[in-house]
Length: 320
Ligand code: PEP
Ligand code: MG
Image (cartoon, rainbow, N blue to C red; front, side):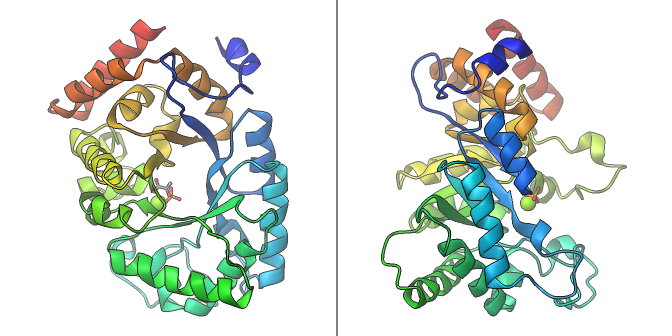
């Protein structure tokens, strides 16, 4: 099956009943972008920009960032590139970001909170992204959003950067859904965000109140927990009210057992690891959305992640 998936990897991704599902690749370097494109990714739903910022004494300046983003955009050959603004925090500190010691770094100054704490860093990053040609290939995505005010504050900095660069075209600005607050207020966020992309790694950590890095808990941290699925369902419902699309860029998008239930909940973009893209595309091609919706309804009523996983495995075995 892997060989067949590879052969069909470069076709546009649609379900058997014709629903367009974008299958993108996650990227953390130029090499990842090349691998994603070679594997048939239709774009990137997540460029983690931390690789440019960590393990150095000073932050990358605008020119350096613009060069790196341009190289990655060019490697994707015009396909959409969703660039996530810097997502660092107390656990991934840099010398030029002296975040005070925190007892709970996962609940501390991180993601968009850092960007708004040091807005000049954010502005530099946004200006670098805006300089990538062709304009519009890059979309901007904000991590760790917990309230609409944060999106508004980022948009204000984006508007300032656009004015400075004399850019009048629309540039898409989306939010990551990684906190329970964002999931349950997805309708409010969707009124002002161009798209929503679910970071299932963090969303699971925060919904279950289980540290994603704790090896003792690893076996129990499953994004197919019904509580997480209900958050995803609520996100999709909120987004639909404003006709926004919802993607998944967390690990669940690379989990073939989970893909049908995600489509059934209303997700229309999956950003997987480059290596998984061909198989995700092949699976999407074999799926019918109404059957996925029936699966999703059942999954939401299960009482444990194990029960959801069994249900999803049985479904997938039938799809073949
Ligand atoms: C996530 O939290 O699911 C995500 C995609 O972001 P990261 O894994 O980089 O925190
Ligand atoms: Mg995250």
